[in-house]
Length: 542
Image 1 (tube, rainbow, N blue to C red):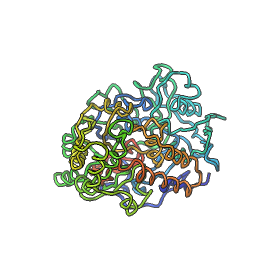
Image 2 (cartoon, one colour; image 1 turned 45 degrees about the vertical axis):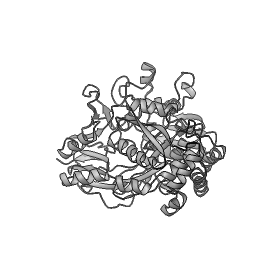
Image 3 (cartoon, rainbow, N blue to C red; image 1 turned 90 degrees about the vertical axis):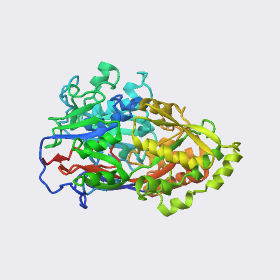
Image 4 (spheres, rainbow, N blue to C red; image 1 turned 120 degrees about the vertical axis):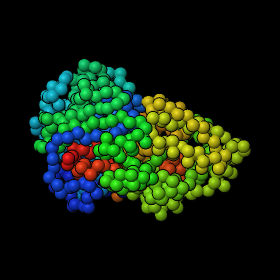
């Protein structure tokens, strides 16, 4: 392919790089982008939940493992980060594949791997060469097809990343040809996501799963002996990493800190080196207490999403769902949680799918109309519903719930909090036994990862059991449309339909957030589309 190729995926500009730098932008405070990189040191970061499994394909019990697995595994491609890359921008660049081609109908994707790739020198893989056969094995594992079809494995919650996969071929050790039964426009973007890292088959052959061991080709590898469940997870530099001179740090140490206030204190006194996605008011307070901290203000790449179970009473009633939508005061949410900064979101959309003016015309805040609909739905005295939330995911979950409680109480809907440990919370959503809850919506660099994943009846992430034939037809059409402009219009039609006619009001707010870091952390730039910590290019100047 040419050195630089542009795709526009449903309104999100995607730059695809085979080589060549991007135009530089302004660095964040404390980035030290012009400094000479230094080697060595330990970078301390935080997660609030202990990883339950190292196998991302096993559904509801594995969510917390993703950021750490991104240190360990490489994907075919990756999303570029750095001072010249906007937080929400999708810039695809080579990782394990050094070049690739896409057929005009977006059905066939051919990847050419680098030569000399190796898995880490850890048992049971022991540093062997990574080839096209490993990509084939991995993609068939994620989709439970080919060699893995008859293994009786549970469905992968993220198999929609490969929807319609026909076959994976390996003409030689460095070439992988991925073919789909129908055009699948989002796949090039999905191939870069760190949820589809390339796996060694030896672990599966030994254990029958990937839950307990992790060995990849990534820049860092888990040091199980130095790690302690519930306290810390230690990742050591991979000395055999394919990218010369990378990574710079010797170690990434992830500290398990469930309590937000404890994490804030740890950052303030230097026990943590970086803390991502900090709410506006907390970031303001931390900078007053510790003015040496560097801060980067960002608009969150995905909204806080309200899951409303359409398959269970009372939300199987359209009037109740519509009432909830009309009760939401998004401006109040932004004032309370984001200092008035941020934006209104649309369910199923990226921030650039519609303008803010268009969004505000589609969504309304009308509590009086909401009260009328609640009575018409058969609840003249109001109603009470259980609200499930993760008691281990920190203060933000509780704060969202409390404000939502206050807003819905005004229309006669009483939310009853039901705190669950995080694995149980995820399992309830996956099984579709929840009633209503809110959480940040994970997206995978393409609007399809929000739109299709949440609203298509065949998606394992359709927790709310949405099944609308008209909507389903639109969701499938946007995936099959190879022309970017036409695809964007289909996406807009689908989003407009589900927000104004069908399943309104389930995107709450799109807040501003802050990444905070110690001044000696250099070249640390997070990207909204990467699950893991973008630390391969970072170094410690101390």
